[in-house]
Length: 471
Ligand code: BG6
Image (cartoon, rainbow, N blue to C red; front, side, top):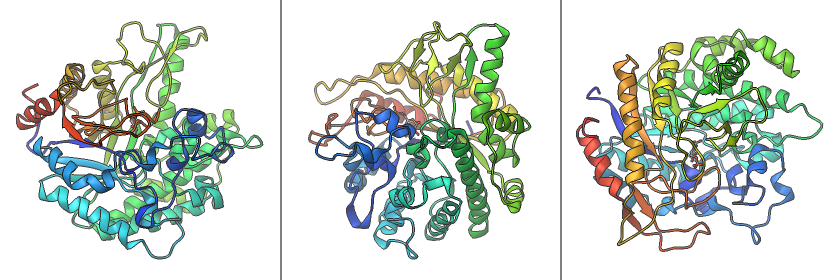
């Protein structure tokens, strides 16, 4: 590890802040996604949230999160005790532009994030900021169809400009879109898309993705113009697909499945649509509507680094009889060689090394692992959690990352996901915990909200103090 390697933790506004209508904030997409009933299909954009929205009947976990909006001073202080040198969060778009359409930003929202980032800095933590993490303003969904509409580029750039100007000198690392490839899977939570029966969903998704990609490149240009020190990253929900067998059809399926995700990074990092795009679009009946400057923008303003989340690898088989298991965002054929978490996500540290090496071979840009961790059922006993399983998962993944670095992969840092327990994005549960800090809340949002250190807290502190040597 270099001396400048960042060790930290990550959260997202919609999973932690709560205070969903406070200080001028208005609804974002995740605020209308309930826990349990129809959650997956609403997130995918296959069920319109409006047809089932009922605050009295369902629990909407983002409304209260872990109340980080109010507790951040104590939470950051606690995280600082571990010695973390980076803290990643997202900015909630509607705290800054409540509908997305205002001419002037909401001062209360800017003040909140300024205080948060200043506090991070005072503890020696570099803020790593995601501009859009599952929180398109609901007004933009209702009025414009969200990223289906090219107008979103301007709304996004107005918002991004406000952030770059306001937080100049305070924030250096920016991620334009959390896990941009998620748009193909969780189209509503990822990008505010509601997929209607009469539309070709592939056309809608790739057109919306094109708008996001152009917006991302334009934001990269803007960020560099405002502050040359800014470092802009794209982000991939990573975890390669393995062929389930050596049958050539499995190998081909895996290549295609991986291309589905690398497609985005190919564009954001290399600055051009990949060679396989034309055939892909033809087969899916996609006809992109573009403007002539789009391709120049993509070509001239690639990202500075590639951020990724990694929880699990995946498998694919051409045979439809294979057993399927859960994985982050995209499901997977169950890999018989791997253990599974309580939620069926399969644990594969070597898969992280494979993924990091593949990404670096492909793009030769610094990588930033901004999410990694184990969602597990923790048991609180005598005011703490003996989470040896989490320590073991993290130890093995950090070891694998170090091997990648020895392989020559350049890395900016490692951020553990959900460093303080928060609401799970997939299920909306609190009981799927990732943190070094336990938050006393249950799946219905009941509890004292107290913060308690788990065993992994002191373990991670030692890892950081030893710059990753003491695992
Ligand atoms: C990533 C997201 O896909 O996975 C996070 O960026 C999410 O928002 C994380 O929390 C883990 O998923 P889950 O469903 O366990 O919270």
